[in-house]
Length: 318
Image (tube, rainbow, N blue to C red; front, side, top):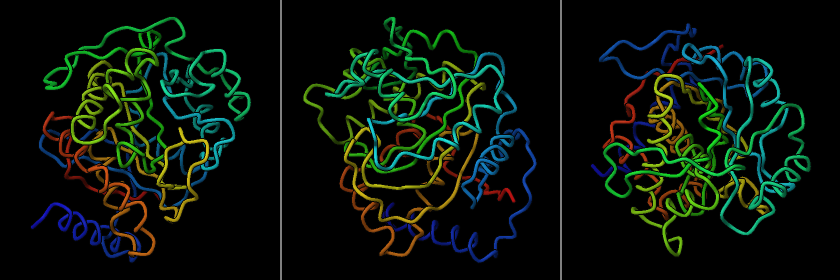
C-alpha cells in the first residue's frame, strides 16, 4: 500500500471516530508517556482561549524557568493570522514567558529588526514582550545525525531561555508543503541572515533536500531544549499559504481544532491525519499543496532522525 493511501485510510478512521464519538475518547489527564507507549496527542474541537489554555496544561509538565513562546507573528496585515486573543491568553498563563521570533531572509519589512518591530505593532503583538532572537546575531547549534548539515545558526537570544512552547498555526507552505511545529522552530528559529540561508540552500530549491535541511534545523532546536519543549498546533484558517505570504490565499479547508503533544512528530502527524480525513472537497487544495511539494517527507525524515513517534494515542480534552 502506498504511503498516501495508508495515510488517507488511517486518518479517515481517526477523524470519523472523533466526530462520530466511536473511539470512546477519554477525558485528558496530564501524564508523561512511559517508555514503549504511543505518544499522547491531546485534541480540542473548540478553538477558544479557554480550550487553548486547558490543552496547554496537558503538555506543560516540563516547562520551567524563562520560557520562549515561538509563534509566527506574520507579515503586515497578513490575512490568515490566528486571532491574537488566543496567543494573549496562552502567554498570560505562562509565567516568565516571552514571544520570540527571528528576522526573515526574503524581501520584507521583517528582514531587519527595526522593520520587524514595526510589523509587530501593525499586527497587534503589543500585549507582551517580543524578542527578535537574532537582533544581536546568531549562535550555532549542532545537528546530531544530520546528513545535510552539521550545524545551524539560530538567533543568539535562544541561549537566554530555559524552555520553549511551540505555538503553531498549522497551514500550507509554498516550499515545505505544510507548516507545522517542525517548520515553526526550524525556519522560525534560524537566524535571518545565516541560518535561513543554510536551511533553504542556494537558489531556494524545493524538494527532499530542502525538507531534510529543514527537519535537521528543527532537530537542533528540539535537542537544545531536551524535555523542556512542548508543541501546540492550531488547525484554523488553513490556507495553502504560509503567514509569511502577505497575500496568502483564502482558506478552503474548514477549521478542525487544537492539537498538543510533547512529541513533535506525533503532533505534526496527527495534524496531517486530520486534514487527510476530511471530505475531498474540503481537503483538495491543501492536500494538493502538501503533495506537490513532497511535504509528507518531513514526517518520514523526522522519523528517520528519531525525533518522535508516528503512532499516537489521541485524547480529547473536553
